[in-house]
Image: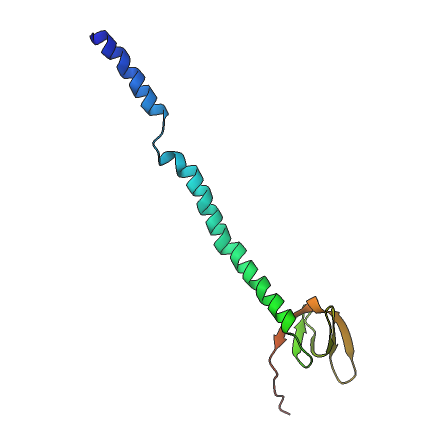
Length: 113
């Protein structure tokens, strides 16, 4: 009888050592989900917010707005349509840009001379 008990013990110990516990089997999945969550909140969400703000800016442009292009050119919008923006750079110069070339809108500044 003791012989059967001795044979059964190693089998039981081996079986429990090979099968990990319930939570231990989910650790790789939980770490993958945590990495995706961190990636989403640090990279994807802020980029979507900036993209949404840029689309709102481009849709809100109107004649008379002072803007800065991606290349750094400052000007005032004279004409605007769905694709193009005509900027007045000084009293004589008018330049045509793609609407997507506008980087941001500037506040009107009073110049003192």
